[in-house]
Image 1 (cartoon, rainbow, N blue to C red):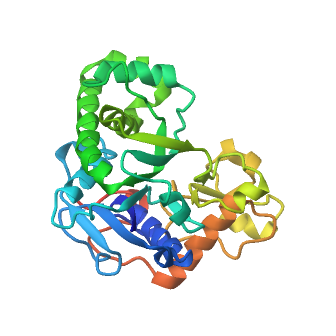
Image 2 (image 1 turned 135 degrees about the vertical axis):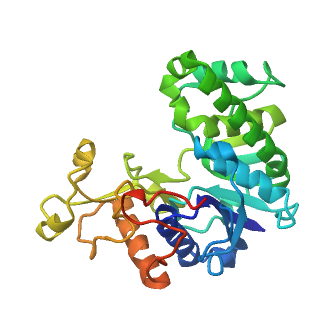
Length: 331
Protein backbone atom coordinates (compact mmCIF):
# COMPACT_ATOMS: atom_id res chain seq x y z
CA UNK A 1 0.00 0.00 0.00
CA UNK A 2 1.33 3.42 -1.02
CA UNK A 3 0.22 6.63 0.70
CA UNK A 4 1.05 9.95 -0.96
CA UNK A 5 0.97 12.86 1.50
CA UNK A 6 1.60 16.61 1.52
CA UNK A 7 1.92 19.00 4.44
CA UNK A 8 -0.03 22.25 4.00
CA UNK A 9 -1.87 25.07 5.69
CA UNK A 10 -5.33 26.24 4.68
CA UNK A 11 -4.54 29.20 2.43
CA UNK A 12 -5.04 30.33 -1.13
CA UNK A 13 -1.36 29.62 -1.79
CA UNK A 14 -1.60 26.00 -0.69
CA UNK A 15 -5.18 25.64 -1.92
CA UNK A 16 -4.46 25.80 -5.64
CA UNK A 17 -1.28 23.74 -5.18
CA UNK A 18 -3.30 21.00 -3.50
CA UNK A 19 -5.89 21.13 -6.27
CA UNK A 20 -3.09 20.56 -8.77
CA UNK A 21 -1.38 17.94 -6.60
CA UNK A 22 -4.52 15.82 -6.22
CA UNK A 23 -5.42 16.33 -9.86
CA UNK A 24 -1.99 15.02 -10.88
CA UNK A 25 -2.57 12.01 -8.60
CA UNK A 26 -5.78 11.19 -10.49
CA UNK A 27 -4.33 12.10 -13.90
CA UNK A 28 -1.51 9.58 -13.46
CA UNK A 29 -3.84 6.80 -12.21
CA UNK A 30 -1.96 6.35 -8.93
CA UNK A 31 -4.88 4.48 -7.31
CA UNK A 32 -4.59 1.75 -9.95
CA UNK A 33 -1.05 1.20 -8.68
CA UNK A 34 -2.09 0.78 -5.05
CA UNK A 35 -1.77 4.40 -3.92
CA UNK A 36 -3.89 6.58 -1.65
CA UNK A 37 -3.62 10.35 -1.14
CA UNK A 38 -3.85 12.37 2.09
CA UNK A 39 -3.51 16.06 2.88
CA UNK A 40 -1.77 16.71 6.21
CA UNK A 41 -3.08 20.13 7.23
CA UNK A 42 -1.96 22.40 10.04
CA UNK A 43 -5.11 24.19 11.18
CA UNK A 44 -7.27 24.68 14.24
CA UNK A 45 -10.21 23.05 12.43
CA UNK A 46 -11.11 21.26 9.19
CA UNK A 47 -11.54 23.68 6.31
CA UNK A 48 -14.06 23.84 3.47
CA UNK A 49 -11.89 21.67 1.19
CA UNK A 50 -11.69 18.74 3.62
CA UNK A 51 -14.70 16.88 2.20
CA UNK A 52 -13.26 16.77 -1.31
CA UNK A 53 -9.57 16.47 -0.40
CA UNK A 54 -8.89 13.59 2.06
CA UNK A 55 -7.44 15.40 5.07
CA UNK A 56 -5.90 14.88 8.47
CA UNK A 57 -5.70 18.14 10.39
CA UNK A 58 -3.86 19.03 13.58
CA UNK A 59 -3.51 22.24 15.55
CA UNK A 60 -0.29 24.12 14.98
CA UNK A 61 2.70 24.24 17.27
CA UNK A 62 3.11 27.82 18.57
CA UNK A 63 6.65 28.04 17.21
CA UNK A 64 5.35 27.59 13.66
CA UNK A 65 4.28 31.23 13.67
CA UNK A 66 7.99 32.00 13.79
CA UNK A 67 9.20 29.12 11.60
CA UNK A 68 6.42 27.71 9.41
CA UNK A 69 8.40 24.75 7.92
CA UNK A 70 8.10 23.17 11.37
CA UNK A 71 4.55 22.29 10.33
CA UNK A 72 5.70 19.40 8.15
CA UNK A 73 7.39 17.48 10.97
CA UNK A 74 4.80 18.54 13.54
CA UNK A 75 1.70 17.45 11.63
CA UNK A 76 3.40 14.21 10.55
CA UNK A 77 4.23 13.33 14.17
CA UNK A 78 0.67 14.14 15.24
CA UNK A 79 -0.74 12.05 12.40
CA UNK A 80 1.19 8.99 13.56
CA UNK A 81 0.09 9.60 17.16
CA UNK A 82 -3.59 9.78 16.15
CA UNK A 83 -6.32 7.19 15.58
CA UNK A 84 -5.98 8.05 11.87
CA UNK A 85 -2.35 6.91 11.72
CA UNK A 86 -1.30 4.99 8.61
CA UNK A 87 -1.01 1.24 8.73
CA UNK A 88 2.18 -0.50 9.88
CA UNK A 89 3.13 -1.69 6.40
CA UNK A 90 2.60 1.28 4.11
CA UNK A 91 5.11 3.16 1.98
CA UNK A 92 4.70 6.84 2.68
CA UNK A 93 5.57 9.16 -0.20
CA UNK A 94 6.04 12.60 1.30
CA UNK A 95 5.79 15.38 -1.26
CA UNK A 96 5.69 19.12 -1.05
CA UNK A 97 2.36 20.49 -2.29
CA UNK A 98 4.18 21.92 -5.30
CA UNK A 99 5.39 18.46 -6.39
CA UNK A 100 3.02 17.48 -9.20
CA UNK A 101 3.01 13.94 -10.53
CA UNK A 102 3.76 12.81 -14.07
CA UNK A 103 4.20 9.04 -13.66
CA UNK A 104 2.94 6.24 -11.38
CA UNK A 105 5.13 5.84 -8.30
CA UNK A 106 4.82 2.09 -7.75
CA UNK A 107 8.27 1.15 -9.04
CA UNK A 108 9.89 3.66 -6.67
CA UNK A 109 7.83 2.56 -3.68
CA UNK A 110 8.88 -1.04 -4.42
CA UNK A 111 12.47 -0.07 -3.51
CA UNK A 112 11.45 0.74 0.09
CA UNK A 113 11.65 -1.61 3.05
CA UNK A 114 12.01 -1.14 6.82
CA UNK A 115 15.30 0.63 7.41
CA UNK A 116 15.76 1.48 3.73
CA UNK A 117 14.17 4.60 2.20
CA UNK A 118 14.50 6.50 -1.08
CA UNK A 119 14.77 10.26 -1.64
CA UNK A 120 15.81 12.96 -4.04
CA UNK A 121 19.29 14.43 -3.64
CA UNK A 122 19.12 17.58 -1.52
CA UNK A 123 20.40 20.84 -2.95
CA UNK A 124 23.13 20.76 -0.25
CA UNK A 125 24.34 17.36 -1.43
CA UNK A 126 27.75 18.83 -2.27
CA UNK A 127 28.31 20.36 1.17
CA UNK A 128 28.68 17.18 3.20
CA UNK A 129 31.57 18.53 5.29
CA UNK A 130 29.57 21.50 6.52
CA UNK A 131 26.46 19.36 7.07
CA UNK A 132 28.59 16.97 9.15
CA UNK A 133 29.79 19.96 11.20
CA UNK A 134 26.16 20.95 11.84
CA UNK A 135 25.36 17.34 12.78
CA UNK A 136 28.23 17.27 15.27
CA UNK A 137 26.83 20.39 16.89
CA UNK A 138 23.44 18.78 17.58
CA UNK A 139 23.81 14.99 17.43
CA UNK A 140 22.86 12.91 20.46
CA UNK A 141 23.58 9.36 19.28
CA UNK A 142 25.76 7.71 16.64
CA UNK A 143 27.69 10.97 16.38
CA UNK A 144 30.83 9.47 14.86
CA UNK A 145 29.43 6.49 13.01
CA UNK A 146 26.19 7.93 11.62
CA UNK A 147 25.72 8.03 7.85
CA UNK A 148 24.29 11.35 6.73
CA UNK A 149 22.22 10.76 3.62
CA UNK A 150 21.59 14.14 1.93
CA UNK A 151 17.90 13.48 1.38
CA UNK A 152 15.15 15.81 0.22
CA UNK A 153 11.56 15.46 -0.95
CA UNK A 154 10.17 13.37 -2.31
CA UNK A 155 10.79 10.98 0.59
CA UNK A 156 9.74 7.35 0.04
CA UNK A 157 9.84 5.76 3.49
CA UNK A 158 8.28 2.78 5.24
CA UNK A 159 5.53 3.76 7.67
CA UNK A 160 7.20 1.85 10.52
CA UNK A 161 10.31 4.01 10.00
CA UNK A 162 8.44 7.30 9.66
CA UNK A 163 6.54 6.53 12.87
CA UNK A 164 9.88 6.59 14.69
CA UNK A 165 11.45 9.35 12.64
CA UNK A 166 8.65 11.96 12.76
CA UNK A 167 8.90 12.82 16.49
CA UNK A 168 12.70 13.11 16.23
CA UNK A 169 12.37 15.20 13.08
CA UNK A 170 10.15 17.64 15.00
CA UNK A 171 12.50 17.56 18.00
CA UNK A 172 15.56 18.40 15.91
CA UNK A 173 13.61 21.20 14.21
CA UNK A 174 12.85 22.80 17.56
CA UNK A 175 16.29 22.25 19.10
CA UNK A 176 18.08 23.80 16.14
CA UNK A 177 15.56 26.63 15.82
CA UNK A 178 15.90 27.58 19.47
CA UNK A 179 19.70 27.51 19.18
CA UNK A 180 19.66 29.59 16.02
CA UNK A 181 17.47 32.20 17.71
CA UNK A 182 19.91 32.52 20.63
CA UNK A 183 23.25 32.15 18.82
CA UNK A 184 23.86 34.90 16.27
CA UNK A 185 27.09 33.31 15.02
CA UNK A 186 25.27 30.15 13.94
CA UNK A 187 23.48 31.87 11.06
CA UNK A 188 26.79 33.20 9.77
CA UNK A 189 28.69 29.94 10.22
CA UNK A 190 26.09 27.92 8.30
CA UNK A 191 24.95 30.66 5.93
CA UNK A 192 25.73 28.61 2.82
CA UNK A 193 23.31 25.95 4.09
CA UNK A 194 20.49 28.53 4.17
CA UNK A 195 20.10 27.50 7.79
CA UNK A 196 17.48 30.11 8.68
CA UNK A 197 14.96 28.49 6.29
CA UNK A 198 16.17 24.90 5.76
CA UNK A 199 16.39 23.67 9.35
CA UNK A 200 13.55 21.21 8.80
CA UNK A 201 15.49 19.57 5.95
CA UNK A 202 18.55 19.05 8.13
CA UNK A 203 16.30 17.91 10.98
CA UNK A 204 14.97 15.11 8.76
CA UNK A 205 18.49 14.05 7.74
CA UNK A 206 19.64 14.07 11.36
CA UNK A 207 16.63 12.14 12.67
CA UNK A 208 17.24 9.45 10.03
CA UNK A 209 20.95 9.36 10.94
CA UNK A 210 20.23 8.95 14.66
CA UNK A 211 17.87 6.05 13.94
CA UNK A 212 20.13 4.45 11.32
CA UNK A 213 17.47 4.69 8.58
CA UNK A 214 19.37 4.79 5.29
CA UNK A 215 18.17 6.61 2.17
CA UNK A 216 19.12 5.70 -1.35
CA UNK A 217 19.70 9.04 -3.04
CA UNK A 218 18.27 9.43 -6.55
CA UNK A 219 18.99 12.51 -8.67
CA UNK A 220 16.03 11.96 -11.01
CA UNK A 221 12.93 11.75 -8.83
CA UNK A 222 11.90 15.28 -9.78
CA UNK A 223 12.91 18.13 -12.00
CA UNK A 224 12.60 21.72 -10.78
CA UNK A 225 11.52 24.72 -12.81
CA UNK A 226 14.90 26.47 -12.45
CA UNK A 227 17.06 23.39 -13.08
CA UNK A 228 18.77 22.50 -16.28
CA UNK A 229 16.83 19.73 -17.98
CA UNK A 230 18.18 16.18 -18.13
CA UNK A 231 18.29 14.14 -21.32
CA UNK A 232 15.04 13.47 -23.17
CA UNK A 233 15.03 9.79 -22.20
CA UNK A 234 15.20 10.81 -18.52
CA UNK A 235 12.44 13.41 -18.93
CA UNK A 236 10.23 10.79 -20.58
CA UNK A 237 10.10 8.81 -17.32
CA UNK A 238 10.44 11.69 -14.83
CA UNK A 239 8.01 10.90 -11.99
CA UNK A 240 7.23 14.49 -10.98
CA UNK A 241 7.99 18.17 -11.32
CA UNK A 242 8.72 20.68 -8.55
CA UNK A 243 7.05 23.86 -9.73
CA UNK A 244 7.80 27.50 -9.13
CA UNK A 245 7.75 29.55 -12.31
CA UNK A 246 6.67 29.21 -15.93
CA UNK A 247 8.02 30.84 -19.06
CA UNK A 248 6.79 31.39 -22.62
CA UNK A 249 9.06 31.91 -25.61
CA UNK A 250 9.92 35.63 -25.56
CA UNK A 251 8.88 36.06 -29.20
CA UNK A 252 5.37 34.68 -28.57
CA UNK A 253 3.50 37.98 -28.86
CA UNK A 254 0.09 36.88 -27.47
CA UNK A 255 1.91 35.95 -24.25
CA UNK A 256 2.90 39.56 -23.58
CA UNK A 257 -0.30 40.15 -21.56
CA UNK A 258 1.08 37.77 -18.90
CA UNK A 259 4.71 38.95 -18.82
CA UNK A 260 6.04 39.60 -15.30
CA UNK A 261 8.34 42.41 -14.27
CA UNK A 262 9.70 40.11 -11.50
CA UNK A 263 12.04 37.22 -12.28
CA UNK A 264 14.66 38.90 -14.46
CA UNK A 265 17.33 36.59 -13.03
CA UNK A 266 15.69 33.70 -14.89
CA UNK A 267 15.16 35.43 -18.24
CA UNK A 268 17.41 32.89 -19.95
CA UNK A 269 14.45 30.49 -19.61
CA UNK A 270 12.19 32.85 -21.55
CA UNK A 271 9.54 35.42 -20.69
CA UNK A 272 8.11 34.71 -17.23
CA UNK A 273 4.31 34.46 -17.32
CA UNK A 274 3.51 32.73 -14.02
CA UNK A 275 5.11 32.38 -10.58
CA UNK A 276 3.90 30.83 -7.35
CA UNK A 277 5.56 33.83 -5.68
CA UNK A 278 2.93 36.12 -7.23
CA UNK A 279 -0.33 36.68 -5.38
CA UNK A 280 -2.20 36.25 -8.69
CA UNK A 281 -0.87 32.68 -9.09
CA UNK A 282 -4.14 31.02 -8.12
CA UNK A 283 -6.35 33.02 -10.45
CA UNK A 284 -4.32 34.06 -13.50
CA UNK A 285 -3.26 30.95 -15.41
CA UNK A 286 -1.79 31.64 -18.86
CA UNK A 287 -3.60 29.60 -21.48
CA UNK A 288 -3.36 28.19 -24.10
CA UNK A 289 0.23 26.97 -24.06
CA UNK A 290 2.13 27.82 -27.25
CA UNK A 291 4.64 25.65 -29.04
CA UNK A 292 8.21 25.73 -27.76
CA UNK A 293 7.46 25.92 -24.03
CA UNK A 294 10.01 23.95 -21.98
CA UNK A 295 9.13 20.75 -20.14
CA UNK A 296 8.49 22.01 -16.57
CA UNK A 297 6.66 25.15 -17.68
CA UNK A 298 4.43 23.14 -20.00
CA UNK A 299 3.42 20.64 -17.35
CA UNK A 300 3.06 23.33 -14.67
CA UNK A 301 0.55 25.30 -16.73
CA UNK A 302 -1.20 22.19 -18.05
CA UNK A 303 -1.81 20.78 -14.57
CA UNK A 304 -2.79 24.19 -13.15
CA UNK A 305 -5.32 24.71 -15.94
CA UNK A 306 -6.75 21.20 -15.94
CA UNK A 307 -6.99 21.08 -12.13
CA UNK A 308 -8.95 24.33 -12.09
CA UNK A 309 -11.24 23.02 -14.83
CA UNK A 310 -11.76 19.82 -12.82
CA UNK A 311 -12.23 21.24 -9.31
CA UNK A 312 -13.54 24.70 -10.14
CA UNK A 313 -12.57 28.01 -8.53
CA UNK A 314 -11.07 28.11 -5.07
CA UNK A 315 -13.84 28.53 -2.47
CA UNK A 316 -14.13 32.04 -1.07
CA UNK A 317 -14.26 31.73 2.71
CA UNK A 318 -12.61 32.56 6.01
CA UNK A 319 -10.04 29.82 5.38
CA UNK A 320 -8.08 31.71 2.75
CA UNK A 321 -7.18 35.31 2.02
CA UNK A 322 -6.67 36.69 -1.47
CA UNK A 323 -4.33 39.45 -2.56
CA UNK A 324 -1.01 40.21 -0.94
CA UNK A 325 -1.79 37.90 2.02
CA UNK A 326 -2.55 34.91 -0.22
CA UNK A 327 0.04 32.74 1.56
CA UNK A 328 -1.37 33.46 5.02
CA UNK A 329 -2.54 30.22 6.65
CA UNK A 330 -5.71 29.89 8.66
CA UNK A 331 -4.79 29.69 12.38
